[in-house]
Amino acid sequence: MNKRWTISEIREFVEKNSDSKLLSTEYHGFSQKLQFQCACGNTFEKTFTKFKNKNQRKCDVCQPPKESR
Ligand SMILES: [Zn+2]
Image (cartoon, rainbow, N blue to C red):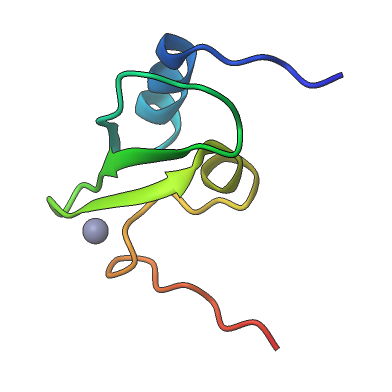
């Protein structure tokens, strides 16, 4: 069963597991894009699922998206 995350749990997860910060103040579901601020100062958008499960925890500059083949 999938855990239902709250915005404060997500913020805690982001702080503990990455150098990024969560900017969004509301969470409506796993398909929603959240706003993050990378350690370099850039802001980026990602779903929490990608952030958590795909390890995409930085902006596209610090962690360029992998090309899928
Ligand atoms: Zn960055």
